[in-house]
Image (cartoon, rainbow, N blue to C red; front, side, top):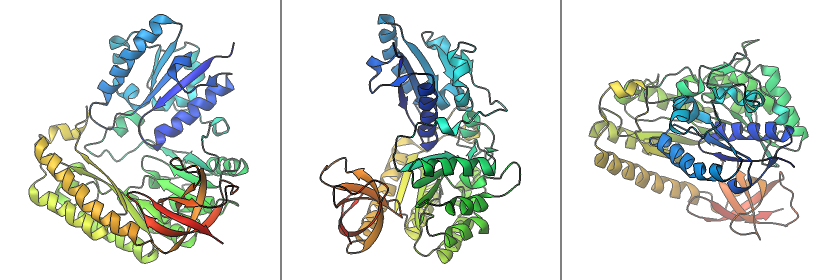
Length: 432
């Protein structure tokens, strides 16, 4: 009888791709993926630890699975960043868990399933990466890891602990994976890394800009995206590659975190407010139509009213099309714990509301500016909310729901006239 598996994924695009790799590896072993945990012989929780209370969420989930395991034969594995962070402590608190596996061992699932190790939270020199086994859920898009880990050591961030030091993949390996993805029909490529633009080929030393250009020049890559860039790693090579290749998306996620140079220094972000704004200006000069998104943290230890006002003024100056904002979340083992206490929660909550209110006005104006324009949209398939319409994304990473011939295949690039701006999306009609 065929064994079955269920994967539950929390967190970022890197975790999504890790789950695709785990799924592909299991399918090669003869497993079949199922949609509910009740059908599964193996349950994998692929966890994220970037926010507070993530450990509690995982242990709460494991508590519910304990009863299920008592009723039938079942394997449970905890993967991802909480697994890396907590390690053997997970087995002490939840001894019914069969194994704990950190992100560095995703490529070694076979050894772990065979029972060689119950706890695998090291970072092997051999980061086995079988791109041909990735189980890609999208018919049009392929995510491709180019660098793992992070060397930046921001004081608030646990990623260097859970993902390890930076390890870039060889240049030619990345190109081989992209070509294989394109040959399988994927026309949109998304390059991934915790600090994606820190990429340096370990063999030739070629940088991120060189890789961007090389991927963009592969036949049938209709659109090329990447996440997440660090402002301190933006260089002329990266900007030139984006400027010179029309299939590189005019969308750049460039996390600022704070508009105050004092807070940025406390965060160890490696740039000042002035340097960040100069970087934005350099990119806009080269690519006037660029669309920026960002991450913002409010309530970091030591953030005064003036520091917060500087964040608001920076948001207003850059006018981000989209944004992710959070209250500071203390993470175990991070240097920020020694800097001081977070801002009072009520004050931080009020600040976060003001950030959202400001950005909501900017976003509304931004979306309304597209009304009446014809935008190229990469078709992804039927709309989730209205099966009579199709959905896709613009070059600026904005979701568009639109009417078009039902026979339009996913992966097509259509011109869509925008008729309406909604809360987060656009609506329109395909035109000849």
